Amino acid sequence: MKGSRKIRVLPGFGLSLGFSIFYISLLVLIPLAAVFIKSFDLTWAQFWSTVSNPRVVASYRISFSTAFWAGAINAVFGLLVAWVLVRYRFPGKGLIDSLVDIPFALPTAVAGIALTTIYAKNGWIGSLLDPLGIKVAYSQSGIIIALVFIGLPFVVRTVQPVLQDLEKEREEAAVMLGAYRLRTFIKVILPELLPALLTGFALSFARGIGEYGSVVFISGNMPLKTEIAPLLIMTKLEQFDYAGATAIAAVMLTISFILLLLINLLQWKMNRRTLSE
Amino acid sequence: MAGAISVHTDSEASKRPRHITESPVVKWLLIGLALAFLGLVVALPLVSVFVEAFRKGAEVYVKALTEPDALSALKLTLLVAVIAVPLNTVFGLAAAWAVSKFSFKGKNFLITLIDLPFAVSPVIAGLVYVLLFGAQGFFGPWLDERGIQIVFALPGIVLATVFVTVPFIARELIPLMQAQGVQEEEAAASLGARGFAIFWRVTLPNIKWGLLYGIILCNARAMGEFGAVSVVSGHIRGQTNTLPLHVEILYNEYQFSASFAVASLLVMLAVATLMVKAIVQWKSSAH
Image (cartoon, rainbow over all chains, first blue to last red; front, side, top):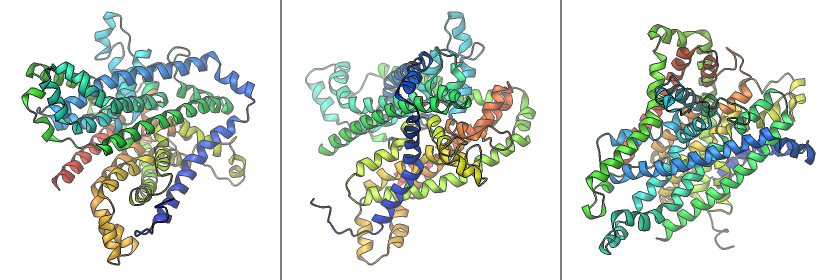
């Protein structure tokens, strides 16, 4: 292995790496391993009957579909917000840029009660939608709104730097070749942004699947209809059904790991592309 | 995953030649659409918190914040942050030093591990400590014999909070320190500076603003964590209730004004956090 025997000039390699690995193992890896070890308490049949229970399957379906739609909405509007922030100048831009980070810094429970109040039947927006027969709070659309709030900064902050580094030359070339603005956007800009957009979508999606605080208030938590998987884990825990909670968690964790791997692959690809250019 | 947060908006990019930008009509249409979306999804909830908090007048607001349960929740929240944030700061600095100053096998894997808590549901972050230290947990009986309580007490709340906020400072520092490279530190080392002096005199001045923002963001997340803490706290009023849990309890008891009053404290924390971020960006772009 070339390079691995290189003399290190700077001190502290062993200490800093050793401490990092120790810390991460003690506080994150070993505790997470407990979930899988605990789920071995169950026989395969017990495990399967827990996770294939209709209420559990429904909660997975709700968590995944709402997180998917929220990710999709964020991909569209996150791109729009990133575009406006990078390409245009307008008064109050700095403030708007800060606003994008609010979901990152605001406690999820606060977001949950605020969104519920706005979208409830007698709320600011809920009261406008109610005569039209649209119910947002205590329905799956409510969950999607909460997850849009939570996931927005992930898309904006992933797309923004890529959009900033986009070369003018390609757009200019497209214009010279006679392409209209929209066509330039679809054929030249969008393909460049696609990896970042996908990463942002995946981050928003991954965060949405596990989100709890903002969702429990607005969802109404009706089994089979608006009950998300993390809430079901909570319910099982409150009933002291530790094995059941663990089985549901093991499935969610496995999916999260796969998503994280995909996201890292995407990011790695993105970095390599920017390096090679 | 949080590495994507610290983006600096470049005003240069907004000055573009006319033929590669949109017509003014389209431009303002897009700006309007983006602002409407942000207003609806982000700004409106913030405003609503204050409106609801003061709905029954300033007296109810002040009372909600000064009643004993609220004060003890505030105290616990501060205590948890005071323990969790320094731990993650030390970890963040160590991990960023290892990742950014050296090349080693499995570096990408380590970065993925640091990201792991982002991808794990907060409820699972709480669950893992119940499985380890709860009454039925692996170490439960052993701890019980010795009268040590972790779950449904302060240590459990701290552990769950640390778990959830592990990546924040590391993820803020890694890109920053990677961009700065190793030349300055190597020069200091070749001039005979010792390890800690290199860090203190060379590295720290370069990363101080990023570090500050990392700490502030980590603090905001630590004080605001809800799902994970909810699992391990046991919701004992006046004892193991943090501010976000107090918000939930008041809300579920239909004491909406009081609930939003406590929530408004957390909104102010979030806004202050982002103000620090704006200052940090302004400071670092001034250099």
